[in-house]
Image (tube, rainbow, N blue to C red):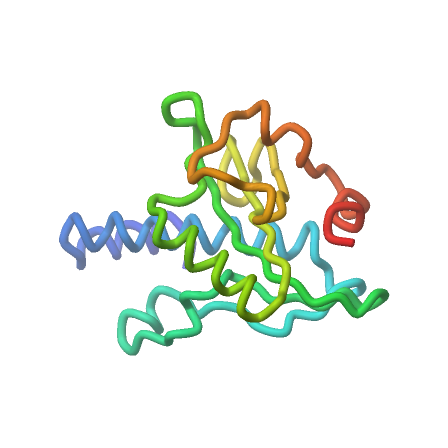
Length: 169
C-alpha cells in the first residue's frame, strides 16, 4: 500500500488528534529508517535494541520505548552506544527543537549515566524525513538545551559513514 493511500485511510479512520500523533510517528519512523540505512549499515554496526512502533505501543505500551531509538554495537571497536533520531521540517524560532520537554532530555541523560552507555542525537533538518537536507549527530553530553542554534549543530554535520566513525569513536 502506498504511503499516500495509507495516510488517507488513517485520516478517515482517526480523529484529528490521533491522526496528527500517528503522522508524527510515521515521520519519525521514516527518519529512523533513513539514519539506519544510510549511516549505520549492518556491515559496520549491529543493532542490539530498537524501540517499538506506534501501533504496538498504542495497544500495549512497552517501557523500553522510553529509551533512545537504537542501541548499536560498532563491529570493529566493540563500542556500544545509543542513538535517538529527531527530524524537523524547519527551525522554530531559529532553533532546532530536538525534544519538546526537559523530561525527555533528563530521561536520556539518566539512561546514559545509569547504563554507562554514550548516547547520540541524530537530527535531520529540512527536506523530508526520508531525505533530509542536513543531518547531524551530536553526543548528548555536548547538548545543554532542548533547542539548539544552527551554529552549534554545524560542527556535528554528517554527510557519510566516515563522519559517523569519527563522532562515535
